[in-house]
Length: 132
Image 1 (tube, rainbow, N blue to C red):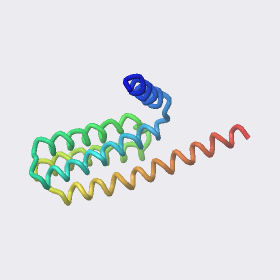
Image 2 (cartoon, rainbow, N blue to C red):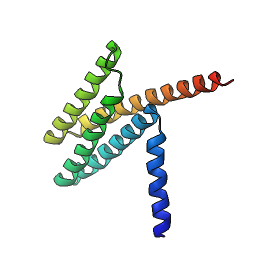
Image 3 (spheres, rainbow, N blue to C red):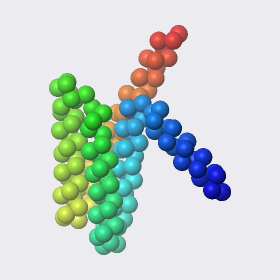
Image 4 (cartoon, rainbow, N blue to C red):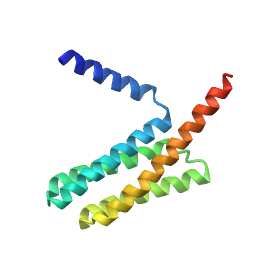
């Protein structure tokens, strides 16, 4: 069993190292969404420490998306501002125990995930066309 876990860990490491920017962003958003979901459950149970831990993880994920965005373009600057705003909203939601704010953030991140998946699809399509 231990060998199997080592193989899985190695596979995950290689997957991260070989992933495209879009794939990494999607993975970060997935992790943020999962953390928000778990934090909402903790919030309902009034488990403040667990809520805080998961919302801090969601913040980390949101902030880790920013370096992947092209800051030199006007659209990139706007998107960076959005992710910075989401981070601040996560802090406020955590401090105020605001479940509705978490739902809004999760909805927005879900839409962002769809956009990044579409960008990845277009990149793959273009890449395939380059070889045909």
